[in-house]
Length: 83
Image (tube, rainbow, N blue to C red):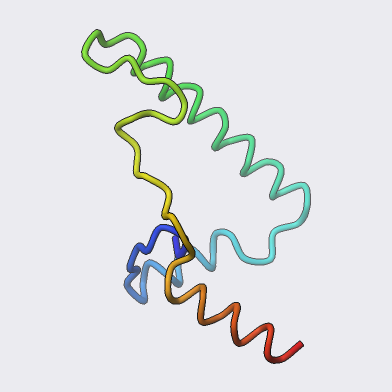
């Protein structure tokens, strides 16, 4: 979320933390596989529409940022200073 500069509400942040913080390696693998399955399903569905023949990544998707978002840059600077 930070990498793309999305702004979360406090509720969104707490929900993300509850869902994805402190996952075991098995849970991380399960979540990653679920997202891969969802991505594959999405591209299969998109491929069935003539107007949106998307490759990966789809041209309809969000462009990745050219450089780290300002909040991540600040966090990385703080982490380097503490190291």
